[in-house]
Amino acid sequence: MFDTFLGKAVTGPLAEKKLQLKQASVITTQWGAWKKAHPETTVLVESLSLGRDFDFRNNRDANGPIFPVGDVDPRLPVHEDIIGIVTESGQPVAFQRSKAFVALKNGDEIAYENIRLKLDAGGIKAVGADGADLGSHQAFWFAWSQFHPQSALWPEQGNVPASSTR
Image 1 (cartoon, rainbow, N blue to C red):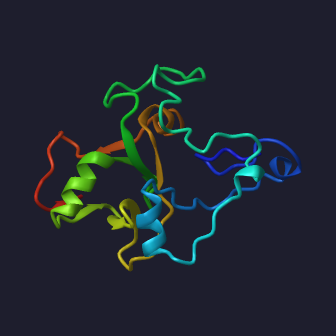
Image 2: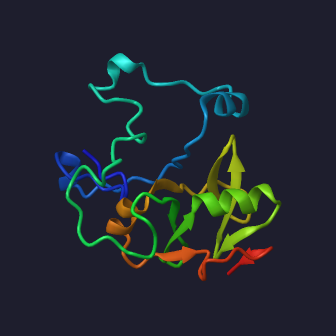
Image 3: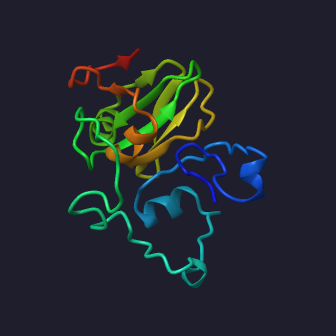
């Protein structure tokens, strides 16, 4: 079993070896947009999903998180969708997905230290200056902030400048 936010094995022999996985990008989009942009994609057969409902993001947490969490960081609403990533310097940063999506659709650049956001098949991912995928994680704010309580927020003052670079 692995912690999907920190990439660490939490049980079993790989936990004993302190195995650390590299973060793969997590992007939420519509299947048609994704398949058009990435026709080589394959999907998990539902019968192999170990009983999980694939629509888990919609309504699962409608009345709040379904599991206990610590103090929720009040800077954003609990269910705010964010794009989270840790910068090269080690600073976790959360980008408000709704605001980033609008800014990127308007042609604005979104940059924070070594990170650039870009649209991908109707979703958003983080890339480096060279365009290489950096492994961003789309999540609800309450979950991201539990694992990364010192996260910087974009936009920092609740506004979205025409060109947003830090």
